[in-house]
Amino acid sequence: MLTINMRSDTQTLPTRAMREAIFNAPLGDDTYGEDPTVKEFEALAAEMTGMEAALLVLSGNMGNLVCLMAHGGHGDEVIIDPDSHIYYYEVGGLANIAGLMPMPVPSHAGMLDPKEVSAAIRAPNLHYPTPKLLCLENTHNRSGGRVVPLDLHRDLCQVAKGRGLAVHLDGARIFNAAIAAGVEVTEYTANVDSIQVCLTKGLGCPLGSFVAGSREFIARADRARKRLGGGMRQAGIIAAAGLYALKNNVNRLADDHRRARVLAERLNDLPNLSVDLRYVESNMVYVDHSATGKSTAEFTKLLREAGVIVSTRPPRQVRLCTNLHHDDATIDEVVERVAAVVRGERVHKGEPTCA
Ligand code: TLP
Image (cartoon, rainbow, N blue to C red; front, side):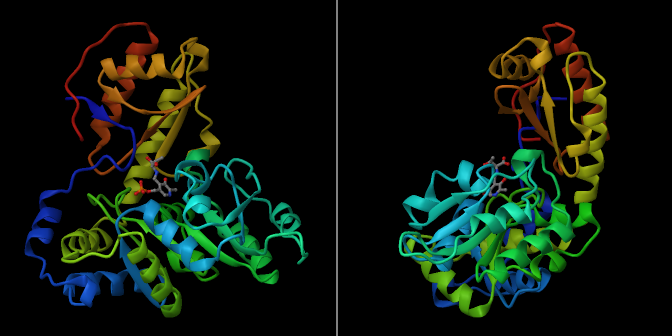
C-alpha cells in the first residue's frame, strides 16, 4: 500500500464513474443560463436541501463569502464562533471582502450556547453596528467534526429569528451531519436562510460547492458570485460531478463515519496517544499526541515518513479524516503505521498518492 492520505476528506480523486459523468455531460454557457447540466444540478441541490433555489460556486470558501455578501451590507454585524471555518480559515473575507463586523461568540467544542448568542445580540443603539446575521457550522470542523444536534440547531435559529437576524449555515458537511444525527438535511435547513454545501468533502468531487436559499436570496448571491469573478461558462463539467455525487455518494458517508470511529478507538488504545471519543461523531479523528513529547510538526513528519499523511492542529493534535478511497484494510494499515511511529520505529513506506 502506498502512502495513505488521511489529511482531509478533500483529498479524493474523481472515480471513473464520476469522470464518465463529467465526460458525458451536456454543456452550455451558464452565464446565459444555458448549461443544462448546471440547471439540473441546481434543481436537485435545491430539492435536497429543501430550498427554493441553489447556485453552483467554485469552493466552500466562495460559497460562504457570496452568502455573507448577499446577507449584509458594509458595517453590519455577524454573530460568529471564532472557531468556525468562516472566521478561522477564510482569510478574513468576512471583513475584508463582505465588509461585515464579526461579533465573536465562542462555542463550547462546536456547540454554541443559545443564551450566549442571545446576550451577544445588542439592542439598536447609535454606537453599535446593526446585528444582521448568525453563522452556524455543521458538522463543526475544528471541534473534531462534531454534529450539532437538531434541537440545539433549532434553538439557535429561534434566538436569531426572534431578534430579527438571518441565519447562514456553513453546511460544508451537512450530509455528514444529517446522516450522523439520523435526521433529514431539510430538518436542518428548515430554519436557516442560506446554506453552503461542499461537493469536495465526503461527496468526492474534484471542485465545487453550492449555496441554497430563497429565489430572491440566490439572485443576490448570483450577483455576489459574479462580483468575485465566479461567474462561469461551461460549468456543467463541475455540475456533472456534483450531480453524480448527490445521487451516489451521500448514503455511503455512513461508512466513513463507521471507519472513523474504529480508527479513533484503535488510535486511542495506542500508548501516548489519546482521542476524545465523545467528539468522534462523523468522519474526523483528532488525535492528541502531546504525551509523545514531540511537537505537532515533528510527529506529523514521522507519520509522513511512515506513509501516513495527516493535517496538523498544533500544539497538541493531528487530524485524520476518512474518505471514499479508504476501506477497512486502509484503517488497519494506518493503525499499524501509527503504532510503529509511537514505538519509535523508523518506517519508510510508499510515495505520496491521493488515495
Ligand atoms: N475545510 C478544509 C480546510 O480548509 C481546513 C478541511 O480540510 O477541512 N467550511 C468548512 C466547515 C470547511 O471545513 C471547509 C474546508 C470550508 C468551509 C471551505 O471549503 P473549500 O476548501 O472548498 O473552500
